[in-house]
Structures are given as structure tokens and as C-alpha cells.
Length: 83
Image 1 (cartoon, helix red, strand yellow):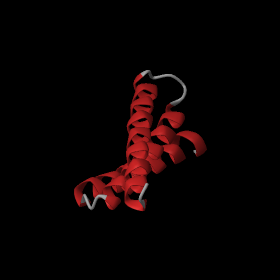
Image 2: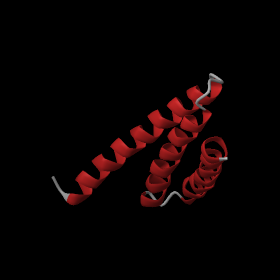
Image 3: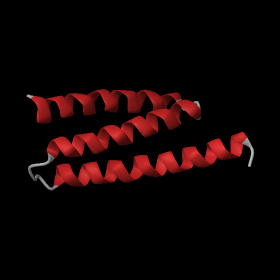
Image 4: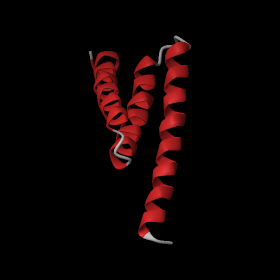
């Protein structure tokens, strides 16, 4: 397997991890249980993986969106778990 093929396979796995963690985070927040901070952790993992994917695919609109979401997720983690 070439480096490019391997890298694309890793990116595909990361994008699916980002999708799954985003869904889990949304579900946790939507259930309105005492775990919103954990939901933001899942959102942050999702945003981080999609930020990387956006950068690697040179999709600047996706990259910028996910960087902003990651900042918001970190604010949510701070507010829900540390304040």
C-alpha cells in the first residue's frame, strides 16, 4: 500500500470517527441529562477530526467552520466541567 493510499484510508477512518462522535455529542446534549459537558467533549473530538480532514483535503470552508466549532466546544467544556 502506498503512503497516499494509506493516508486516505486513515482520513476515511478519522472522518467516520468525527461523524460518530458528533452524533453521540448531539444525542447527549439533546437528551438533557446531567452530561452536557461530556457531550461537548464528543463534539470537540468530532470538530478536531473534521478540522484535520478539512485541512488535508484543502476544504477551507470546512476547515474554518470546524475550527470555530472546536473553539465553541472548548468553551462549552470549560463552562460545563470547570466553572
